[in-house]
Image (cartoon, rainbow, N blue to C red):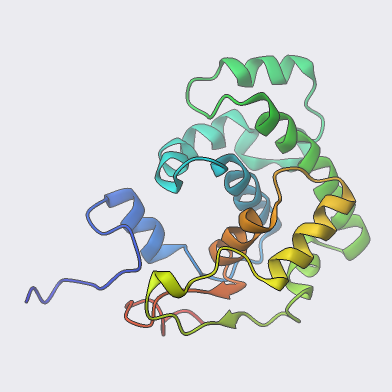
Length: 190
């Protein structure tokens, strides 16, 4: 057996996916700008593969002012037209418009809770949930927690925040550690 082989949940053989899995997925995120980025990228993924979104991630960063949600909240019809012409991102009008709407709601949530971090991590009292999943077939696509957060975000006016998207978001930002128990990252993530 190759001593350099690492058992991963996903991504093996795809450099971009390996890097994402090994360095980001499931690591607790507390920076509002990063929390916003993942929220928008997870929404952009709807109906697509995560590898498709990851390939476009740098283009998204450029197109969306380096995830400056304060600027994005001010986008207008000219910005929407510009983004619809940008071949480097997913050019879906509803997803683009939702990113702008979600930036506006994101700011409102920050104002109410002090930060988006306080809001989102408040659902788990600041403590990540660590699951013991041996096989992907055991991994849920949504949970009562993702249902609750999705419902609350929709009530606040956000779009592309269905329970399945929110569960993927919770996994990405480390609120839920769903690394497989056989994965080398399972015990590394705290």
